[in-house]
Length: 124
Image (cartoon, rainbow, N blue to C red; front, side):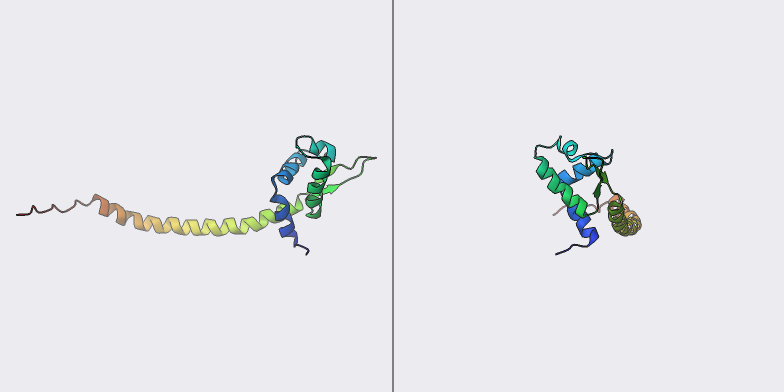
């Protein structure tokens, strides 16, 4: 089953190792060996993670003689950001509405709290 681009990107970002690899690539291109150094896993395991990132379009691999440096591709991240922006705007509108509603309710609630309670009668 082939995932749509947004789903592929979100799937790739779901793993903390892959997010770490992307964070490293944000500071510049790197080889698989360089990327594997901070991880307690084999170069083959890192290569599998990189393949997922490559399939999602989050990285590309170049050629420099015998080296194949990995390069961060930002277009899929922009797509995720645009998708999330729709929800941020939705929640912002709803929270603004909630804030306006709470401002109308607060004076009534505050008035009830400041009103003196009626004195209780003592039983005879």
